[in-house]
Image (cartoon, rainbow, N blue to C red; front, side, top):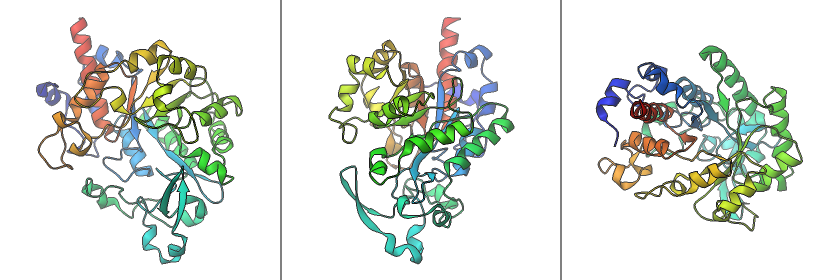
Length: 369
């Protein structure tokens, strides 16, 4: 478990003061501890979505100011072909669209990757129409504080996210990376809206599709990544996301099959890493699996998802009290995974990810001294 005295020495979490940047945390640790793991990355999952409504420019900016190395926009496509940042094409849970009577008739049911989903969908709206909506907190029962910001922020385009990334890189004097995910690429392709040319064009317009650029492209569909690499000549590194069960839509292979040693070696011919569900790295209450070691043997980085501070999302042994919205021992969980050898992680609270990384590697450096 984490030494709480060390936490007090390092600094207070932004959970108590969410507008504070995480940089103040790093400076109080030994310099060589900071250098020990610059390659280990903290990804602001949908921005700093533990503190602001997800996939808003405010959420991405806060993530960067808290010390995240990368910001993560999930990408979907509008009716007029523009890449925008939403977790899903259905926007009823993340915008105030239901409060707009002019769009009431747009509510409908579609089959999304084989599942009937009812709501409002980005591909039924032009960008101009989407810009009349405002973001809301997706899980208000657990993140009531985030509802303070309901109605304040627009749905951003991918281009706006990239512009923000460039501005923050200048202001913070460090390059902020971007980690876009293509959401449901097969579904959108069936609508005549292909991700690949739009994504590649956006990255190349800003000189981000090159060696050394701080970009990862991710997808739950292996075929999408293969097409990006082989047909569209994407040079940016790519991450194949995996779930605990099932497999990519329309793919006869399961995620479990892809994560065998042979499957990982095959993946390494196309992608640069995997993004597994964290339970595939360390099952709740269990010991680490061989996944990190097997992936590293295949030359792949491992960046699991999703780390969150609320009891609802923590394994039973790390919960504090019975309130699902209360914070549990999230630092302990982050440290446990850092010490298991992962190369990065996706977290809703980037300040916790940065702090836990510093703690984990300060300990390792001290032990080696």
